[in-house]
Length: 414
Image 1 (cartoon, rainbow, N blue to C red):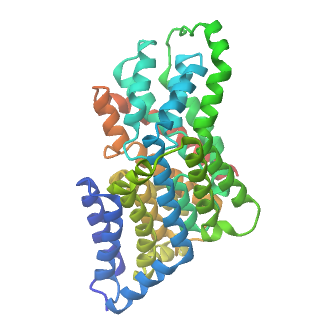
Image 2: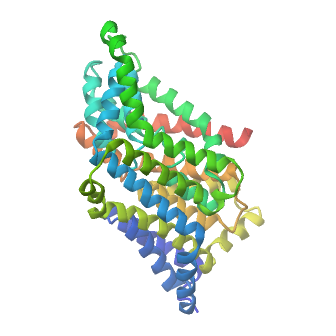
């Protein structure tokens, strides 16, 4: 016998989750602790060991957890081997326009899934933005916005991987629906970020042409581990062997990326072992497990049955649920993974997942998280550029509204 009915249990658990995230508790701890609390107050205690065991031995869960660990290891090794520096420096020399550099570099660094990673690109953006005479709030907006344009179509993004796994969709099927949205995001960022600016001066074309071949080679070599990971993930997810259903496509792709990075960087054993001493890599890995544990616990608690009744009776429009639940949760928690895990768990019994609604859940959560005041990238960027959240929001909120209009248009029309 559970202590509370399903609705009270989920409200208490979500409040607990939000409080912990506002206290800056690690996401891995938060998701697992929330699942445990929900189990204690919303599930018969005799069922708790069964839920934990079923989650732990599930093949999909294990694959996604290991792939998440591999992606975080790849990200950390990129920094430790200085490959990320080489990639950014060579790209900056190849591109002959400060506007494009500002647009591309944050997105390139967005390929490395580091919490608050906008700080990595902030100095680069600041340097290029000075050439254009940009104000601090516009610099902050450009750094934040372009860092986050890549994630909706990045096949080894943890957010996408977890969304695909929890909904039973392939990463590729979700990415394909979100390509037009990313095009809109890039266009909006460029228009809003560079509105009414004078034409920028380009670097010396003679010098640029003479070094372009060498710079491109350096960039390609430095980028090759990420490229290999993406290519293998997309190919394995598209050939129809069913690997994506058990998470093997991303796991194999991550291993491929690590092998390429090891081969080109000639890293030493101490460098390779250094990320294993960092709590961050284990925290994100624990968050992947926590997302599955929370979903299974919510299912056992009967949370989804509440919304199933409302949807079946026509009392609530399904699009409203797909939009509001993930967006509000992600905004309140400042976490796309937390918002998506909770939203998908709540909605699981109310609808049959498809690439169409999985994409809408993802984008709703993602855009809610992007503008959340607890979003680390936003907080760090505002602090770095010595501006205020209100000034940056004047650029962010219109961009979010246009992007969300595009998201809804794609959902309705296709």
